[in-house]
Image (cartoon, rainbow, N blue to C red):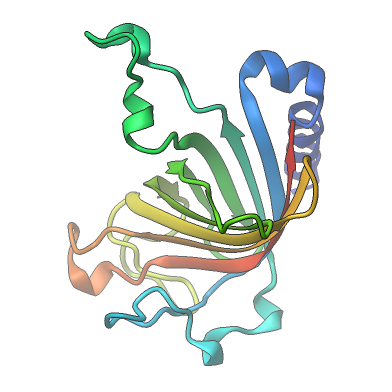
Length: 202
């Protein structure tokens, strides 16, 4: 466990170095603490809202870390070089991330992140969509562990934050992974993480 923490800390410090981030095309790094074992409402229009009664501070045992990359310019691979494919999708940033839980399941994800500023207020909203893998049980789990059905999951996330200055931001974050019934609805308990994170842009 100590070796894993040391390795993760070293990786974070390396990625946080501007000399390393620039050539790698890294746009931003984010990290913070998350609460796991949160349940979401399953009915529209509040299906993504967490159930307050399932948010417990004793489950504040997850460290969340994301690396966001510059939105790639793919104009050179299309017939019209003045049009970038990612521009059609409002320039999302690719990201890779982990939610490392020290008691229950952990999840790693890859996704696209759409940054939507709310006017000139400094407030922003960011939906994310992608895929995830986890180290939890597929079936036969004993509570509080979860039956997840598939090793690979659909992933979505959302950040609601405030841009403090050109470099720093703070945000409330929700991450969700589930297999959406592909491996059976009774094995689709899903993973949810809710927390507060800070971001640093290069």
